Image 1: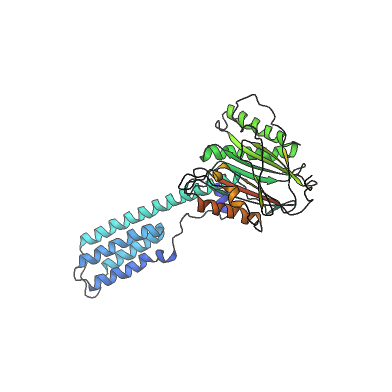
Image 2: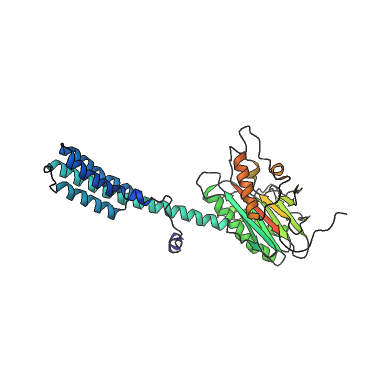
Length: 368
């Protein structure tokens, strides 16, 4: 997988060294020559010259480190105006430092290559559970964001996707217990089962049952750890202004309609994988009116469990109340994330946010 990513040009070093930093060893060579010419003590000029290969080892590759080292040795042994010949000990020290610099440059390049490979393999694994959403699926616009609770990490247990099916466009947003490769492996497995189940199961309860059966079966056979997952499933019908929702222990989504925010009241079934009772098909999905320009905002519990310095949880509904809906789902999820970051001083769990807006289709029925 890493080689495929490399061929596509996606492998990039985590920290790119600026060009001006790469020129420092060559500027150091000029400075060392100046010191040798004007410094009366020749040992000081040799000391300055010995630093140059070590500097090159940390900003250049092995080849250019070797070039700089050879140039430094040549400049050290070349007679210059007003300078004496270097001592044999200076030349020996210079050769030793140059060999050490070459070894450092080689090891640094190998370590960097390994880190880059690991970073991009983890990114590819995360994309398996968090594929890039298209901007539009049938008559729906959508956008999602994911942020790991661990600074700089790309691996987590969240998953979401939106796909068309014979029964309407279907959505999943889930949160697998834990972090790391075990969680992302389970999330990827659940997402693949979702992609298959939405083509065959006419009801969301059947999709949830397939997810439950797979996570329990794989855990019993040792393919995945015994983890549990909360999942929110949604089905957007094309011929009706409604969305059908089924929550397996997942926080209920928000519905933005105009300047009002509605907290959808769902009765969730147990989370997947708990095995507290014999496995049965979950109950029926809950229909909710969902017309043109309405937006469904789904999220993982890491968002509403974010806390400020006083220990208060992030009040998502209150912060959205009265908000003029942004022009696109992308701007909405970005606003929610930035608002949560401004509010919270602690985020102990991964955060996923998914927004879906109906841009066409039938209008919802009038109340009564």
